[in-house]
Image (cartoon, rainbow, N blue to C red):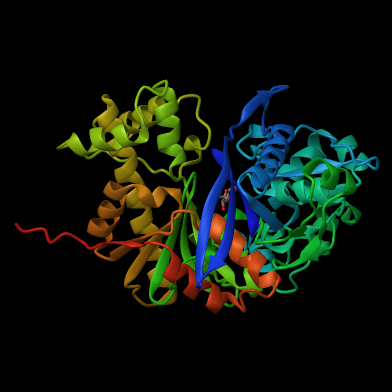
Length: 471
Ligand code: LFR
């Protein structure tokens, strides 16, 4: 049996279990299990299927033995901001409502009536997104206060899965910062903010850093799987794990490309200046108390929805091809407009936007797809300008990581538009970041510098240079 560690990486559209081990200084990956993730409608709310996701995690773990693998540890990362409240019998008090649900509509303004926006930013360093945990909790406080009264514990999604595996409750730091309830300087739950909002502090767990060994499996699971293993906290926020595997950050702006495009740089301190607030950049907590100064851009969600609205008649690759064939179509939308967060129909929303802004309306699948890709790159360019303005310097390179970096047309478009060299890879950045954190926790990798060197030597990174356009 080959010893390995297991990364569970669940994004908004799919989840996977990847087994990994070091061989001659290189990281080897073996995908064990892949499954779909999606938002479903339940009791009139958009929700995640947490029970099914946990079954998929167990299914993946069980597949290891048949593949000759013996996992020594497991780490879980997922998207951020969403959570579950448990009562004092450890039972979930609500459906696991997804951040795209409309329950947070108007909640930002309600919170700002109590805490000034500027103060929230100064204390937490976190961007204003209407779906942040703070606004989700405040919506419960306003509309279903009895739920918060009954709540005994607050766990974010990976914390909840870790609890199901080990029986131990803990909040992991990188994901906790995405709530907008953690103080960026003390790195603890911000009691003043919680007091002011009337959310009881007792439900929050102690915050633990990535690389913490949380425990081992519960007895019934050891019996079910036939083996025990350590449960280790990686950066449980997927973006936190992804950025760990950017091989080189010198002169580099990264784009973690998936359902969202997260564009930014790594820092050793939070930047909470007015300009950063105005441009709505975030300072999310990272491993070793590094900060991700970045911006959320609507990302491939736009094209995922377009594909779904065309009843999956076209694959992603076909949509790229169709977009490539279109000439002379230049309409773009502001992808960051909240109207694109969860529209009834993405294609129609894009068309309506173009009509309202007096642009040509995309009608063919190729035109719609081209409009999405061009619009995304427009937003990347704007974010890059803002980063360069705040840092008062130019960045030479862009490193696109994550599943979206396989889109070569998009990579080339980014290079041509920004006139910067684009590096694409690693594709499985999030799972890799998760794995190296586990290996750091057990001392097989010394530190993040060694981790990044290993990533650099283990995975292919493709280079896209800006095309020279001749007149
Ligand atoms: C990416 C991500 C982003 C977060 C968004 C919502 O998967 O985690 O970092 O802003 O999803 O949780």
